Length: 325
Ligand code: SAM
Ligand code: DTB
Ligand code: SF4
Image 1 (cartoon, rainbow, N blue to C red):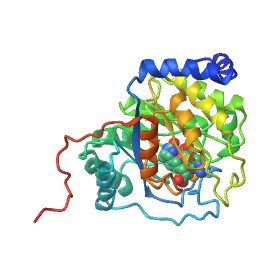
Image 2 (cartoon, rainbow, N blue to C red):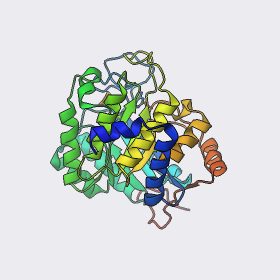
Image 3 (cartoon, helix red, strand yellow):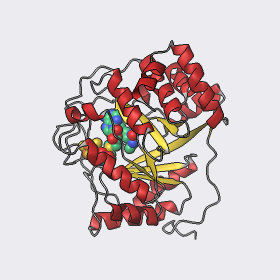
Image 4 (cartoon, helix red, strand yellow):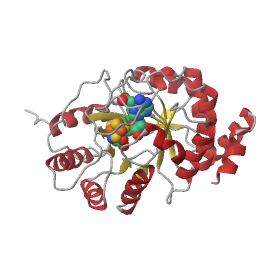
């Protein structure tokens, strides 16, 4: 969609915008379901990049303790627990600039992916930049979706990151698409951007070909010690408008109400679901920050008459499940 159209939609009276978004939502997503995704940080902190919102950049003194890449069996334990709790998508994040074929860490990630893929959930990873070879190997190992956010507008990107470019992000997304994985790509609200920046971001997302399979909308979780640590929270009605515009611009995507949900009231979240959000991160922790309690989320969905997207059940036993005696 073109920026001008997005701009007109965004500035409609709120209820008119919601009505438009709702019609698109009901056409594409009539089931009243919300996808539950569990996140796990498989390698935490010590990242070379300087993304000014991130708890895991080595450039800032944040409360995060660095942790090495997890071993396959420890990841499997967490993945099995996520599946048992009803998650249908398991997303693993690593604090890296990117990955390279032929390195030990990439081989280890491929081993993790092969094992998690056997559990039958959707498998998403976010490892930073990829080339075509790495993308193909991840796909062959069983990755279904790759998360790589553009985070903000092309114009604002240089104000929040200097160690890689907006074009680098687009190049990785292209490699993911060429390898046949779904793209999960979205952004963050609250990085000191204007409403126009947010709409430019949606313009770029909606013009990806094919459009992303999922669009995470994160609200900045301000991290002490980062340049964005004292940023003001985003107004909830601006968030709702952004969700609605995203729903209209990328109608077939899961729109994921992502980081920062713990800071949004239940009423605010309900409006986001009404506006078109149909996926959340589920479980008490995001990568390094907290998320609402799983029980509270299930209770909220029930009160709203929404159901968790049906979990996958028909799966083979995973390779490193402990033997029954
Ligand atoms: N290193 C990889 C990368 O940058 O693509 C993957 C991990 S990175 C933590 C994944 C995404 O999490 C970022 O693109 C950003 O959208 C989101 N994120 C990171 N820190 C955040 C924060 N403090 N608040 C909200 N979203 C955040
Ligand atoms: C995404 O867009 N949000 C998730 C996931 N993709 C990897 C990450 C949110 C991180 C929030 C801050 C933290 O916990 O460190
Ligand atoms: Fe954080 Fe990813 Fe940026 Fe590294 S590349 S600082 S992990 S957002």
